[in-house]
Image (cartoon, rainbow, N blue to C red):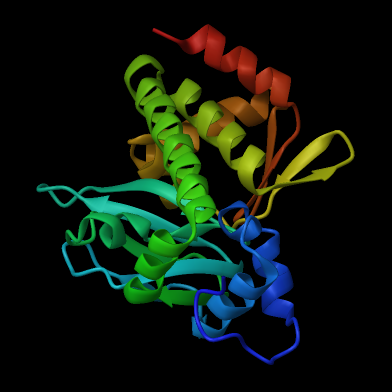
Length: 241
């Protein structure tokens, strides 16, 4: 049964795009078309704030193109990046599930095209589509595991190990294979990396110099290429405490 009144609109590019996203892939063609009708498209320049920490959350975000950084600011004013998202990824679901304010802020890292689904339509999906609910549970479980691994790296690795871990994680999620190397398809400044690994920009600069010296990574402007993934894994093993 369709979520809403069945649409007469033919399958759109948006429907095809949503079909590539695990969260929506299990929906029937009718339900997928209905959901896409409820979404709104937004274009943002780099550096645009999508929402602020501690504000109400009313939208689910789906990235078509571009990249987004989700971060929090501590009592001392220090910024920490919790996650980054690229094309085909969704974020902003927690506040829709528990009704609490946003636990973090979100900002675009590059020009981005983002689709949004309101909390009301999100809730309707949860109620009417068990497969959507199961896919969401899997997504949340994956994010808990990722967060646990990130905390483990922060606690048990020095700065070189933490940076090696983060670059491998970024390459895994946002990487484009180029021969034997992996180009991270996301602009990354040293300040961005510092907020991801819980360090100063100066410390990240020294750690990058160390990794470059071992011919493990290449940095050109704000683009990072992993030259030797296995070498980065060895650094994580060597630098663990």
